[in-house]
Length: 186
View 1 (cartoon, rainbow, N blue to C red):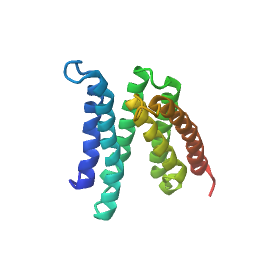
View 2: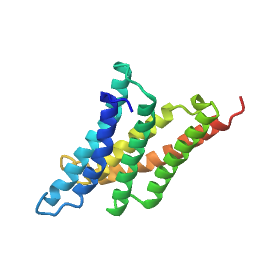
View 3: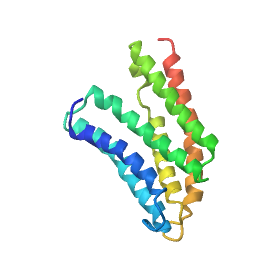
View 4: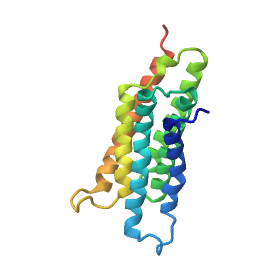
């Protein structure tokens, strides 16, 4: 495992997952209940930012590695799955939506591994639709974690719910796109 800044940022994202989840289980006298949503959202936002930053730095510093290419999507999927499970438990996301998103992530990860094994990994490279889905999903999760009104005006739960439904539709759309690309005869 190469030790470099991008890989350390990916490990940081993984290490932040239990910290982010633990915030919701802290005794009320440790963190005021009104701050729990804010602190968890801030931790998730930092973790999500490292997703962009590690990729950027890996390319900018020429520190890409096979291990980093493996670990980065694993960290992403763990982070999203942990957040969705927590949001389902808190009653902020429907379990069917979480199942669609997590199920797609598992399916596409397996598809990419299989396609790499048969020498066709480029046919399931990340698409623009996948990037849009990820953006909608991350913003939705941030809003749903925050839950409280933003600036006393924006209903974070309502907007987060709309966005997570949009992300779920885009999840199915991108899964169809990847499956079609993988099984197209060339």
